Length: 520
Image (cartoon, rainbow, N blue to C red; front, side, top):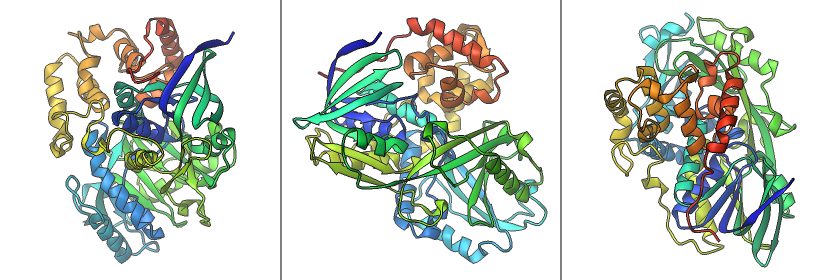
């Protein structure tokens, strides 16, 4: 039986709960707009949780002449590091030089540009490397003698989305995961949308402006709104594999390949190595994207070309794939398609902004520019603000972003361990990396590990599950094990069913996240 809710009136309806939609909702709410965001699945359920887990300038984009994109991404890199020092951490990369591929002079020139296209305050400059003498060379095959080292940053991509949505919510936005936009039309310069939740509840929204941040579904939403698209999208699948750890240090690697592509090998979740990505044309349903056997073999083969420790498909403990909805710029191969974004506005029926393309690193700037474009179609009370604000949990040294919070984040981890000495060290480190200063909210009232409740999987206690349900919209074991944490890597068989059952029992006790008071 269909349930009907009252009409919600807002300034901005954002359709799409990936990184771009969440970032736009956050920026808009902080500028004083009333915002409703809906997402057909969980937050970050698709492309935004299937990245290479990096905040980076895109070193390889230099070969395609995308200096503007690389400069923009490099500037954003340190802005984001300061805003979320718990989620984003510095990471050094080793780039071995392989005979027959890009020569040393070309790599050196590329890294020189990479060092100087934007100001650096947190990350060191690149340097030449003798792999025979450096610790990172020990994991590599004997023929690799020289290379380079440069710096970027690692990120928990899915949590970055959730924290943007949480910040938007705390600034008054209504966040509606698992809620599909089932109908949409404009009249009298207002958008009228019907949103249907999983339980059948239907909400009507009247919005002054519509934001299409649906990624791979951007053209579908425009068709639903009866708006002719001015752009085409090119769907490119990127896949990753996770294997038991191939090296002991905390640096990462960037490997060249004969086909011109590059592949990352990153330290991942203490005991694993993350390897990716691929670039494969995709024309099927974006909700049903998986890694292929050929992609798995491809990534294993590149790994085996560089690492002493050999791997095969049987060594893969986890894999994931996502669709990059890229702007179709006519490039001949998928790897060369631009990763930049474009914002298109349309005011014929009612104010509409559509997002095409983009990448995790530039999401904040995209959101800022989106609000500036929206300000050209309707009144926006506030000015740009997100470059000088922390994300939830990032206020390690106070409300303002600070270099020291990045450079000395380990000091914060030690403070948490001293404040909660009963918490196992590995769990304390995970909590501080995942929740930052919000760890105090998670651990409120706890005096011992027993106060966190029963462990339903290794390292996952009832107290954390309850926090994720009440604060971060978690509704299933997958939400918890693979997006808000990566504890699925260590979870034993049967843990998913056990967690799902626990969550279903407690759903009736979990309050629905409410919004502020700026909605009609």
